[in-house]
Image (cartoon, rainbow, N blue to C red):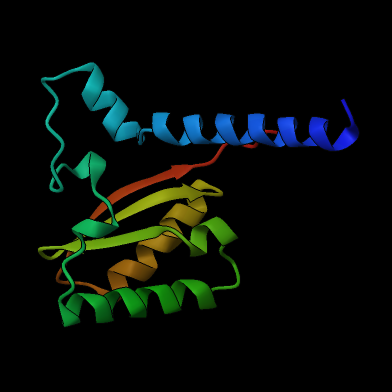
Length: 132
């Protein structure tokens, strides 16, 4: 076999593997639901709340913009702290994602509570463990 034939066969094999990997991919929620048929996935389940649950009401979007701006301007927050997920549904703000420390979590909650006094805040922020 010449080198072009070998290269072609390797590429063909990689293409076959890649196409199979795409077919077998499931999101974590799909894999959990497929293992147990008694689990029902809904947008209002707070553990599974995602960006698509965000109602695109102008007032909510404006509040998300204000919160995001304040978080990104705060030089004391880590990159993860500045990029927490902010989801607003029915006057309830859900915060998700990793933060550097308990102090950073408190700082984020203080910023958000100042900007949204009439909303309930559901804190799902987690302190990330150092893996080094």
